[in-house]
Image (tube, rainbow, N blue to C red; front, side):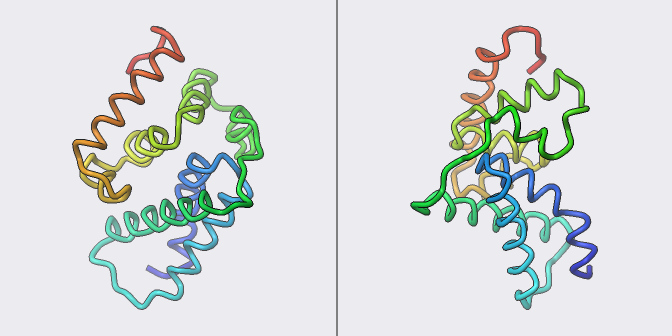
Length: 158
């Protein structure tokens, strides 16, 4: 697949994953660009499109970790505004409530939720991307669902 096609297909997913991790649209944009720079400099053939997708997300997550380590990093945008910046302000208000609640989770709980529920990775793939065991990932998803239940109340189906 040529780089332009890959960019068109996966740039939004990588951006949303980075934004969910960093809570900073400018840093998320930088991470997205860095992912594609790494892809362009990589001389590797991927087994499948799914392998490419997993590689892109794993690189994005690793780059986000690097940003967290930077002494200059700070989330600069209120949680409620993160997805409004993407033009999702016209989306279903209930979905935005859930999205905002997810964004308020600690990053150790937020990233597994984003990868599993929004990006569609299975437990094994999420665990590989995050570098944790499947048991640890399942525990994080369970804790995240419990926190979301307490934040959102009983009006939502978990």
